[in-house]
Length: 238
Image (cartoon, rainbow, N blue to C red; front, side, top):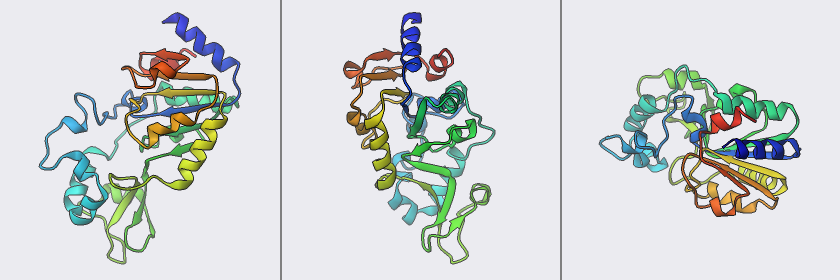
């Protein structure tokens, strides 16, 4: 492992256009459950499957059940950034890291100090009315009992990409541009099974693709360096 850490450290030292692409594993060390792990949301029992509840169509037809699940499982209390978040923010401050592209909706990268963060799946820190589009305070929505509603009567929703909804075109386009231009792409804490986000890796044209994950991914054979470990443990050493 020390050999691989040293190799990654050298890559970082020699790069000044690094992009980081991360998934749920980046935040599990902060206490946020992984959707697909053995104790993740997908393996807990509800009247409806979590992937059905977290869909745009379900929110429209069953907002009460959606928000019961949302407040129970997705409202974060006293969650703080971990070593991976802070190291990535430091690399950006050192002008080495150009951007963080994340599948997470928790906002922990920004809380750690990262400035250039592309949120592929949106964020739980923004809400808007599904009827009139007016923005709604996140603190008010998260503290609401039941379904938060706008002054116009419309259901307020989190600014996240739910199942059945499309990713934001502008975020996708910018993510593709940054990945294609990077000289070092570090991918961490993701199984790379969720599309279209995982497909972004295919746009990388550089020589150094680094994968850091506790389990193998389908892209391992294409990588320059593969490290099977927690992303926080690895980033804390580089």
